[in-house]
Amino acid sequence: MVLGQIRNLIVDLEEKDNSFKFNSNPTNGIELNKLTIFVGTNGSGKSMIMKLTWLCNFIMFSRLAAKDSPAEKEYVETNYFMEMCFSKTFRNAEDLDCKVKAQFECGSVLSFHYKNGDLVQYDINLQEGVDDGIKPIYLSSTTRLLTSIEDYISFKKDLNEYVKDEEKIAKK
Image (cartoon, rainbow, N blue to C red; front, side, top):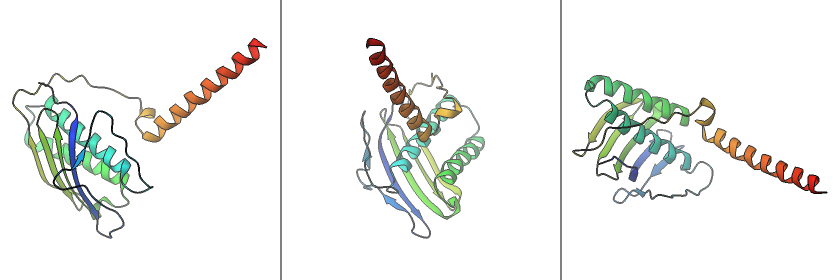
C-alpha cells in the first residue's frame, strides 16, 4: 500500500499580534482532491496551505524513507524543517501558534503543534504495510519556489508567442 497524497488538512494557525489567522473547518478540514484550486485575496492563506501540504508530505515521506532512525533525530529534523518553512512565510515564527492534522489516502495521519518557534506536539500514525519504496524527486534550486515556476510558465508562453510570430513571418 502506498502513502498517497493528503486528502484532508485541518489547520488552526494564528500569529500573536493577530496579523494573520487561518482556521479551516475543525471537523471536516480542507478536502484536497486530485485537482484543488485555491482562490482568494492576497494574504488569505493560499500559499500557506500549499506550504503546509508540502511540509506534511515531506515529513511523512522522510519518515517512511528512514523508518529505523532514532526518534530524537527525527524530532530535531522535523523541527528544523518546520522552522525553515514558517520563518520563510511569517515575519516572526516565534510568534506563531499552528496546529495541523493531515490525513493521507492510505489512512495514515500526521499531526503537529508548532508554537512560539518550537515543535511542542508531534505524532505520526502510520498505517501498517505502507510502502517505503520512495523514489525522491529532485528539483533544481530555480524551480523550488512558486514564483520561479510562474516565471518559467510565463517564459514558455512568451517563447511560444515568439515562435508563432516567426512562423507567420516565414510564411509571408
